[in-house]
Length: 342
Length: 286
Image (cartoon, rainbow over all chains, first blue to last red; front, side, top):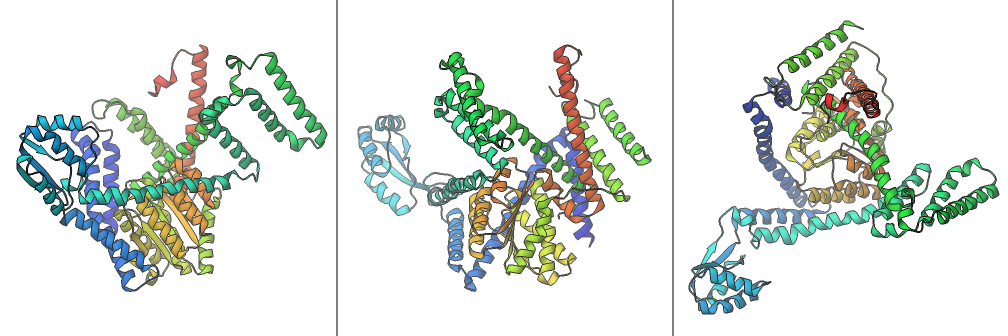
């Protein structure tokens, strides 16, 4: 019971206090532990814990397939993907390369032509000069997943150099080298799938914005207006919106705000028309057609910048302060052992 | 002023004075405001925890998102569907995740009482283990350890979008009636919340990631914003020591507001030439 209940609490409280005050104590060993060792310990523990996660994932998927649960076919795909990644990472390097030694200097251009048949060469002249610089030993800048492909290509190069040797990149390096089986899996399967998920955000943002911007009440209207101003103000076309259009929109906005207090619609209409005429008249008199004369509040980029710098910043800072205090209070509760999530 | 408050104030003062006297010798230079801030905040929270423990009545404003947790689980029970709890994509080194796991404990207790299925997909193996501990405890507390099984908390993937795809798949296939998003979230927040919205689930979100709050507000029924999220587990537990820490947190917030206003006014006075010292430099903030 002690090991299960009190021990974790003692470790959490002890380490918590030590790390917290370690930030302030003037001792290089403590500083080193707090800034480097502690985070490395966490990384090591997390690395071992991944086995737990992977085994759990695999177990659940296998059980699903065995029991033929709903959607078991997806589990089959998950198991296959898992097995393939393990195979490409631990059992099959798929990173063969060819090295040419004592290249015939007269056949450098032929070699460049050969290389261009297996991979795109942006600048043949540059490649030729590179090969000429390392005639004694040159590694073909292409990784072959299969050994057979590498061998067949090596045979075609036998007339160009005295010695053509095949090699395999070392374990560990094979997961980082472009062109290996692991990197093929990463860049051709994993990255497109991740990008697809990320790209879905565009559609979700559209549907979420539609719901948020629907005019239901004053707050939603404010959000809609601010959103439109920000969107237009942050793109180049925003600078082209003329001052009279912005002033008219401002008059409309003021009209919308005062509308509930003026029951007489004709009077309201008159006020709005009067406002538009007045603002336009002032603009013409003060020569706002000249860009230098336009007041800042009639430029959409300026308005959007103001919204971003003041109301948005104020709101987000209020939330940030709350989050910071919440973080401190939660940490305090955990360090003192008042709250135990473990 | 009561005796306990005097003792706490005196202790705080002694710690700060010790720090000041040994500054540069025992303690490193350059982060004095942080140290003083931590000591004052800790002392304030400690005082209110102690006050709550000794029976002082503490009022907490109602938070609709927290009141809706039981309602959401109840709805799932009535519909005969499961409850999905997503504890975010960060590891246990983030306070958000810890706060999320704390809330999971309360949700699990309700699902145990209502005999509703709970599904907790995790993104990190350590989070999986912590969440399992938390759920096991809750089912035990609710008197239903028989309903608990380890696989209700399971691992999907460490990768952000693979995890999002996995959770979305669970939502589409199992159509849970209630979805909870409590933890640290990044770009996947909207992917999850919109999918949850499309299946008609009642959704309650809470996060300390300020940039994700707008997405949750848009797509979820209830969102715990900022400190509400961190106060949630204390609020739900009804334990005086935890509630006291929320009160302490609020008092610190008041102190921060007073400090900000004071600094603002003093800086204005300095700029007007009414005073000749710079408060920002004095506090080491500039």
